[in-house]
Image (cartoon, rainbow, N blue to C red; front, side):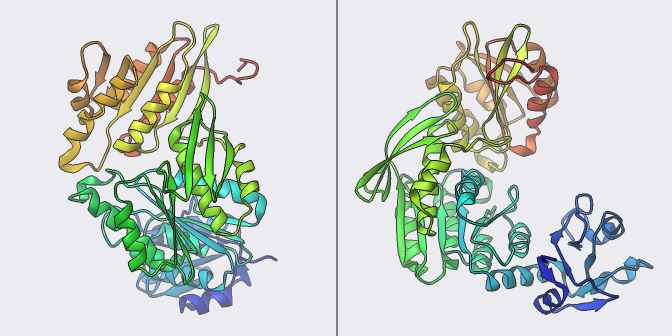
Length: 477
């Protein structure tokens, strides 16, 4: 059996106490009793809302081979009979296991952070490196104090490339995570007004993102967006952290991986990248200049991790957007169809502007409209009114004539838009969802963008439920 961990290695790494007859090993690790797989270990983590110990029985019923539980919770487990490893604190034990996984691995490790594009860039790296070796990467956006150690602990010993997304809401969150991950390449995609309610300035956000450099291994690399006004701050932070090699990407003439030219299209794009005195033509399987900028970062990080740049560039042509991050749906309406662009996973001012530009470049069918459906950007704090109203200028510049809004903060954008733009406003996402289903028409291009917590994803699902999905080739459902 190809174990992820043997039980003896688990005990040693976590300093645990065995209870019952432990299996020889485990094939995976889960913290979710509902989705745990046969032969996996269930780590009963206590979160802000739920305590995994309350679901230990369900985890066993669903195939868990082993429970990792806290010593203090043993009385609460009652008569539950199961193989267990008992530890002082389950999350701390998982952190120790994650560090052991990093210690035993010979993989080239890439860590990604930034205000915009973290998950997209991580998934692009997963995609382009997959043909070149065994890749292990974060699931979804597992980028916080439990997601990073969980991803580390799940990393098989025989991994060639490890890709880790590292996020934060406050200062000092990235620092312990990057020291666990110990990347060979640390990448900062961008600095923008995300989580602005928890920071006094963009400089503070940049400084918090720069913590990622503190974990870079000796002889490692930093990759920084040269187009951000905070480049100098980030470069100095990388130098202060002792990073040996600092590289940049972007349209700036001084960038090491330079965006020389960009040609956008509705379904894809082409960029020309200047790298080391030569220019590479890069076909992209997804539209948007922001995706092209992410692609430059991916090319840089992959090459610095030892990947063949020609094969990386070839793989970018087959990349496709993911759910909530620009994926397109062709939905049948009567004898025609509409195009739905799903950008509902997350939002901040920078990503909102990128999505508006994406809609600008999309081509409606004759008689169709470009419709922006926008929900609130969360975690903007005292800046909420300013940043939401500030979206009016990008909307006007993009020539978008129909804007449908939901949420209390989007009332500020409603009030800032000029009268020539047709605005529909509903306080609740549910009300706007009902309106949208009845108001879209054949030929329209509809883009939904919001922070995930607003629930605007339900608008996407409502439209997909109301109108049949078609293939672009045949137009058939």
